[in-house]
Image (cartoon, rainbow, N blue to C red):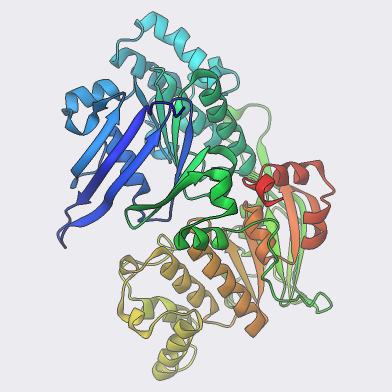
Length: 538
């Protein structure tokens, strides 16, 4: 017997009204969620999944409106309620776990105050009782030492702890439905696993229903009973998770599954040439940062501790680890964006650790950087042609005609149309912007490109395109990559050698095939075990 749905969407249509004309973001969505059930809503950026979630909570952004359809929650149509009545539903009967805790938490209020505020607004506890209930909620959300964490500000907590605080806020009213909108997309795999474990336990033990909005198919495979796949505002397929992964019906679903990186997928990196001389040798790198006097005993924080990395020509070395492991700081040391406390950096055998002036400028030319955020790293005022040509002008490479030809050739190499030359970053998609960033990095024909989480902000199909592009460019030019990432499934696709960092130190360094087949260090084994979708891939 099919259980009575707690939430039923029937013929839901949602649109936005920007100056350029109406945008139909959700077009006729039908979806049911039963008590205690986890349903994943998956799709790429612009598919309409987050708009669907925001419509349920009555939190559409300005210009958004429900044009047609019903949102039946316990038989009541939320689409017809006033804002006052919706406020009574939000927080008590429906809880929301938003994507970005850094944005969603008030930076000038203590964590405990923000959790207690929900209790007081909905008159669920007196001021005195709210404190005790807040500590219970923080503990229930998995936050260690809730007495201490309740008195801290958001910036004093890690990303995972902030996300757990948001879960405590969502749980405060003991809701029957939790909508989790990309709740772990910015978190490391082990932290992600802990938070998803908690949501799953909550659904199982208390009968709370969960609508899990995510672009991560591995997360959906591991956690959801059913998966609904959205594309261009329409649910193209909805099925039990096992059947959807084993026998997807919709071409779009098959496309997503084919694009998603997996630990068991064959690597796409070209064969390496390990016998070639190293282009980069980082030896005994150490970096200390001064601590504020209020920190007590220790005067410095050792972020990087005696790290060694070697990258050969034509090789991709991945630098992996969780937040705080020191991998991004190591990359900045290699780029000489910050000076090391100790150790040395050799580029093609030349010691550039203390290089200044012209020698450091040489390093800048031979080692380039691709940032994580393709929008934030591009000047919004410049055209694509100006952005890609900027390094050529800075180093006075060629004349004006020669530079224009070089820029056109670079855009062609990264599969961007010639018409992109005159566009600005805001006019491009995320994948196109990352292609621009790669073209700019290649403009000076560098020996080494440092890629810091270059695909983490991209949808899976765009991510797959960029990874294939990087592999093809390496095969064509022999460029070497230092690939910084926390996504081991992506690393499996692109890397020849993997260096694993934890707490500033290298705990394991091995050829990719060896590391993924038989990891030697317990920490590496823990990272691999936490990768979402691993059981299904295996």
